[in-house]
Length: 286
Image (cartoon, rainbow, N blue to C red):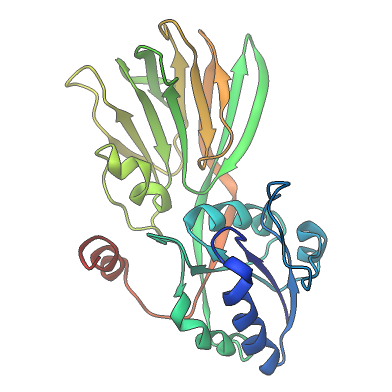
């Protein structure tokens, strides 16, 4: 069994937890590789005694990816793993860690991987494309959400939201979120959206600070296509970001189309913790 480990160097300082995990895995007969989940700042010093492999190259022959960090790190790394058909196990050394299976103090459970004592939980993803003047200018895949928001100084954005080509509502506001059940506990929840079990198959649409009482969050079937048409954006432009990544600019008349992706993220489960236990632990036991 070969496992690729991607610790966030800004959270796992000196790779303390990655080192512990490597010892546990190798003692269980697991081959490991260490990769960075993303490029680091040029002024950030990596330990001289560490050798880092290329993530995409190592994933070609890997059986599993283990991410060390918060939800952002897991989101970033899991996309590459998903494209390679590799399951992902998250170790939380961040704050909330909704997607993580283990906390930093539970690393001993990694020894169970070698004997196959784990299960796989599938999570739906979304595909997004942006059309500008009839041309597709952007495509991506999201595990959490697609966020359409105003700029920092912009006035409200005018948007029309359609479901399978039928208008759901048209409103002015700070933006709109289109998310998966996995993403329902993230930005969407903060904007007043519903909590949805992460293994469900639904698309959630949540307006952000809508300037009308008619615009409310709604939940659709996994097979719907959500379209957002961008109207007036005040003095600045609107922006779109996927899973909290780099934002792209949207202009008047741009069309954003979102549907269920053919990809699914596969998360490794070592424990039998219910979604409702996680909610209680993350929100009420802090």
